[in-house]
Image (cartoon, rainbow, N blue to C red; front, top):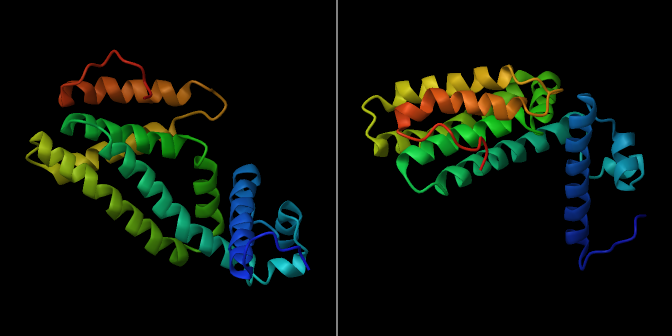
Length: 200
């Protein structure tokens, strides 16, 4: 039986569960394969049989991971948007945060989840994720004075997705170059300077 290092058994179980989720996330990014319970045990110092005390199967673990990563990613974007001082800069912060998410380190995790998880499991969390993100973007566009915020939000999202798809993972500066192109496109519309560092 693993040695309990937490103050209570409940805290110990929470720590072990957290460690398993973190290990699964790392493995998805590294291999894009469904993590085996044995490998997860090795990563976290648990016996394979002990892993099943926390998750009934690898699919069960991935469902739990989905339940936390989408809200986490949404909070990351929303926090970045909320930190911008003006409506125009909030729109641009939305672009920055989403491109960082879609073309950054979490990209491999998102790709793996889309490949490995059944669509009916992904559908609800993804829908909620997109709905959460539309709220700050629509509000920023309304505050900016945009008369068609929904249509403009769709165009902005399309630009971000297209830019992210063309980021080459093997090229370190590719994401910065994509963000700079988006800045040249959206900077004049937002009334922002286009010659500026591509990341905050």
